[in-house]
Every structure is written in C-alpha cells, then in structure tokens.
Length: 139
Image (tube, rainbow, N blue to C red):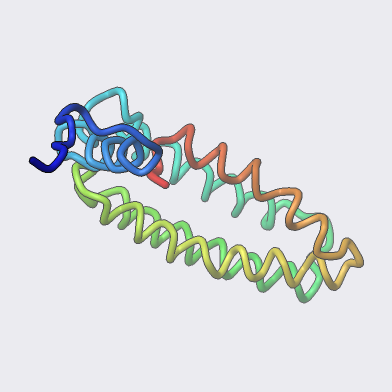
C-alpha cells in the first residue's frame, strides 16, 4: 500500500510563529501581568506628558516646535482615551499605532529639515520598538 506519513507534532518556523501569535494574543495572556500591559495607564500618559513638557519648556519655540506642541497635546488627549480601552484585546495596540503615526511623520520631517537625513530616523526605529515592547505593546 501507499506509504503513510508519520503523525506527530508539527515543527518549523511557521508553526512556531502561529503558536506564539495564538499565545500572545489570547485574552488570558494580554490580561496577565506577564504582558506588562497594566503599565500602560501610567507609562503611555507619562511619555506623552514628557513630550509635551519638552515642547513647552523649549527656550525659544520655532514655528516647527509649535507644530510639535499641538501634535503632542493632541497625542496626550488621545493617549488618555486609549488607556481606557481594555488591555485584554489588541484594540489599544492598533489605536496606539494610529496615534503615533502623526508623531513619526512630524519627527521624520523635522529631522530632514534640520539636515539629519533619513539615516538618523532609521537609526531610531530599534529604540522605539524596544520602548514599545517594554511597555507591553504587541507587535
């Protein structure tokens, strides 16, 4: 007869990725202290306040700095809403990603205008990813 495949546990990078995704997006994991998402209510607004204070305490605000002041103030208000979302779903992650988009675009434009070039912005991406990971943001 035809050769039968041996049944056993599936292996490989895709299987591992699927298992990781299933585990880390489960309500039980997202609600657990291991996910570090309980820190959101403090870290996210704290970071937004720090950004805003940096703009407010600047010695002589340039036109571009005023734009950052407005963006950071709006970001703080949005973050205060985002931290009210349940941490047991990925909805806060999506909302935070959307809220960070204008900041990222403004940062990129600002550094380009100041002559830093795109390499500087790209070099900051790993730091941003690590900071978001530390406070429990899912990939």
